[in-house]
Image (cartoon, rainbow, N blue to C red; front, side, top):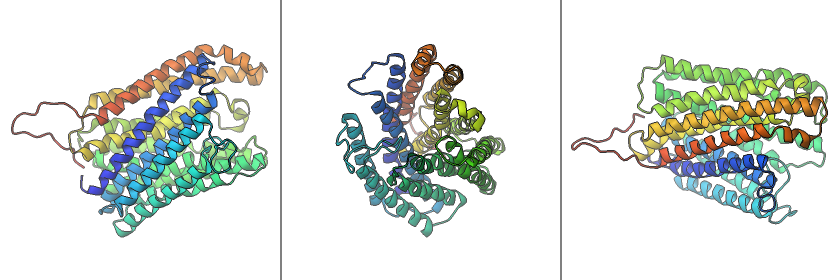
Length: 456
């Protein structure tokens, strides 16, 4: 570790992994509710469990992004973070806001209160006071990292990362605008949800993946940066107008069906480019880096993102297909593999790379870490196929033949059992991962020898 302020990342990674454990646990409980519908129905209704599942996902991913930025920016900018105190203050605000959200959702506090009560908009249900706290934390973060970069060396990786992080913060401001007209509400709502995960988050993903390839493979920076610019250009070109594939059925003009279909079909390109980039960098690489687990997670991230976000997104993005499939289990299949591949795996890759460096010791428990990858990736892939088959059957029975929703759900029970089994594998993998990176490795070191610290 070259810079002391990189240790800030440890605190962010710890919070992120704690919320990661909460998220997958809630997911497993939700999977059980699908096979035993009355489970916790009075204590924690399905809608509350789902809010906890999706919101903890978003918060821990963002904490991971923040931690990754605090880890890699000092190295790229060749200077310490502008203010470590501000960085820790930002984390405290985020943790307090997260606890406030959990208590508000779980006990349904202050219902109907404009400032303290939860809102009814999916993914952005947070009370207004929490949203204000998130904005304050984001402003602190942007000031801190931007000042660091402006005073230090500028690289393509930090430029793209800052563009993505600024976009993430600015687009969140739309969460404060809640028009009465439902079509208008959904139009602006997708400015956040789509332009995050299929826009600015892709820039963050590309820059962090580029940093990992630079460190793990030893490929020249110039080659990495050329790939990075191509990927980012493709992501922005396809992602911005690709938002239109969410406008098909919400009352917007008909031309969005064509714009959305064409540009969202092109969204496969940046994800294919990221997968190609990762494998070409490893192929060209000259460095035999000791941290094999970080390389596995990086390649897994690029591959699963291509299939989850790219291929499974394309499966039902054309409006002629989407007319039948939107809101079915096919959507759930795409959402699970896309998030796991693109963003969960990315965060776990940077955690795996950074933790040994931050703790100043060998890449530890690599076998357990790699086992966690195959458990989680295998479980999530199986879950995706199961939900795809469930969604195909659901589409035919419900949307084509016109059977009632609950009658169709009864016929999907076998798929829900299989999905629950896949969820167990994912949770076990997540717990193994947290153990692998958080617990010290017990090893006997011969007298006169010291453990290797991985090259940075």
